[in-house]
Image: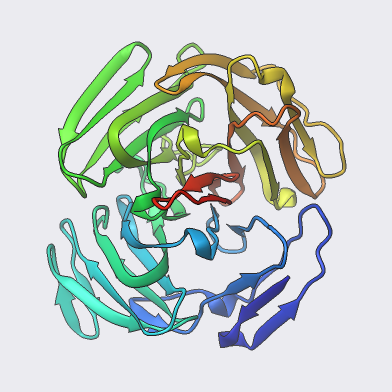
Length: 393
């Protein structure tokens, strides 16, 4: 495996055994403002790997699942939140790539000395390893990013307020799926006792969306680049999930926060929710355990396959499960699932592995809290693009 970051002169070859490996990167690779820089990072391997970015060295925490080059696209729609500095980071997979960002919402973006507002388009040409960061004091949700060739887009807030009335904030971040990799059916697992904000982003005009929670149903028909927000505050006596179904592809993101203005394990986080057709049969992640005070796994398992799921740390010790574990039956357009919530005790160090002995495809989302805040990320996903090729992340 090779890691390259020309900005800091890094070209490092690693021999990685099966399991998980952590690589710490130089802090000078952080981006600071709306500008084009040369801070791209490339990871190459001769064999299949999964890559997660976990930022736990800064004042606040965040993390996201890295998408491979083959899964990158040329059309994206941004999802951010209310807070301090909404941010988009764009990196090109090819040289001489023309990229256009069309601003949406009540935003002002200053780029190269010019102010851009709702409906304005900014175009730049990027080469490999170049990164283009765009910042705004407003919510950039709905902003579109299009390119001549493949690009990666990271969406974040320097400090998100979830809900907007909160007096505490935290860093939130996610790598966006291209719009041709969105889905139609989603089971969204919640973090109990936290505020859970669903944000559903639409790709096509006249898209019909249905959100189901606790025998309540909300429906809407909206056009492209619009979004639907819905807040939930689950308790141990209420369902710990919602179902989102649409007749055309949508993206679903979950923000967590606290209505009590306390950090605790409910500090703001953001994660992209995989569609049910994007589940895998095994997952693995390296988690920086020494800093984590609360580790929560949400599993969405086909009904009848719960006993095939194995959860263990790389040292083969099983996860300790607290008595508050939930198992809830969920009905969707694509069949019946069981949502299982697992609170795990934190070991000294290592990686986490979740597998199905019968190779049943299931969803897996990690949520973790530290002394500085919270982070959440899907453990992986499989995406079938328009040309019928399936990619595994």
